Image 1: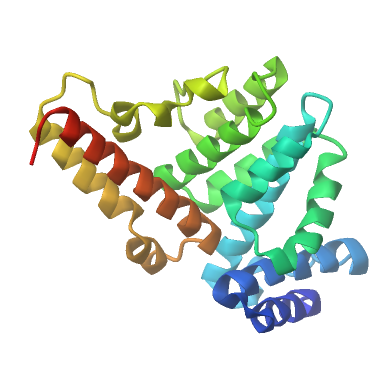
Image 2: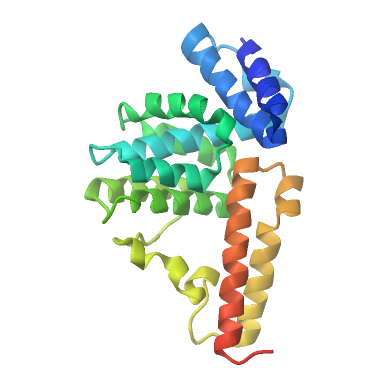
Length: 247
């Protein structure tokens, strides 16, 4: 059954949020099909006839579920965690109520989050940067209400393993997040020569450029996330140049 998806997509677009609104509407429609009509999973994804729309649906559904279950994993979902989720994934205000319903459904039980991590990893196999950015967004959510709980750390470590990201460090305090250090943002050693830093900066800006991501059919929510990351990359590069007296 796809009527919920069609109606949701049309509603999101008409409400004035363009492509992002349509995609969020599509997710709301899928949730309606699944939870109200009870038949959302009976039609194969290939029958949607639009591969990019399916990838976007998987991305949105997975990040909502992962964020909600992460917030619940330590026993209590706080307002700070909910606000961090909204900030990280830029949900259109007009769709907030419907997304909140999905979020509330997912946060009832933190169990089963691995399924959503696997789904995301399978749909975006080879897209290491995208998966790493999702993991970093989840890290921010985990720290939104204070020091990281051991259950949150286990959650993030499990998701990192599913994503194929080995050896990922998760700071215990918000003040220790790696984006505080411009060298960590670029992923270069503090002693690296400026030629290496510049080459890394160029590579990262290419990889995070919205036009590149749109051409690859990446979800609008991720493009929003990557745009913020690119701003952080440019700021880090400028900071290093100023520190080293580069023109």
